[in-house]
Image (tube, rainbow, N blue to C red; front, side):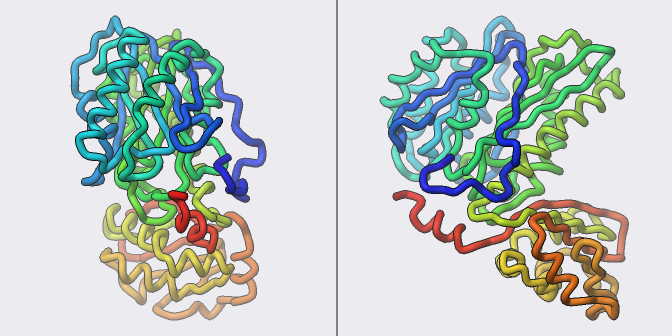
Length: 417
């Protein structure tokens, strides 16, 4: 858990899940002293030769040096006889650090390449933390040998701890699917708590599977699933400079290769991958800085998919909506406001608003059946569902957010201290 932060009330009651070993992947973590002493803040995932790598990244115009490096490397042809690596540091975003930031990435990649003996183009780095401060590269470089010497297939939980910043709990998820009678395993870890808004995938996410799958197919799956998981969550409406999702498929499963010629098998794998990505995205929202409520927003009856998403995100990002929910106030007028400001097509007299199964508004007015006390009681729940039926089309979207409390201000007012 991050310093001085209480565990989120929305954290999984069972704690960090037991994640399975993924054949072909080992992990290590180390306390390099980037921001705090004696706290895990760097991690390495070493990935076997012949693996497939895919990823999605922030579209921020001020994205970090590590993100730019990763994006460039995804397009470079790979040597199948060599392994891969994901390296991550927390405590410093290495963003908006000029040429010094570029040199930091190059220095870390160069030394790591020499230590674990893989091409520099096979090493993908990520940095998360404070923006605009030079990365203490020397501390990291001095720790790389320790990372290499402590690699283990069972240390993924430590890796999840090492990538945290203002997170109050490490995030992990896993599942498996059966393909041609053989098991394919998928697991992943994530970090994210603040500066969370969709514009790629989200935050930092690392997923591992033993599936056999080509890079183009894996990339397409990850991009498509991100659109309905990580791109449908928001904590505060701010998109990070460092958002990265990387996935490695080692091909070590005994199941046959997933190809477009086997649509049923591919669909089953897609379902498993979506389950893990959706779970991780929800955990990020549930660890939203200061969050006390987890909110699902369903928008249906829209003229287009884009409109349904825009309205959902307009509601989810509204400070007025989020603070009303924090105060357990069923102020449905703020929902009306957020629909209207979204820029999407909506007709006042056709839309309906629900809190849970309580019909709040319809026909351009408060519903005759609306009961304020029932709505107020509903708002006391920890998990809430708000539904809007626009009544003008057939498209729908679901997005997820959290409330906005005094704690969010407290955490971010002294984030650099």
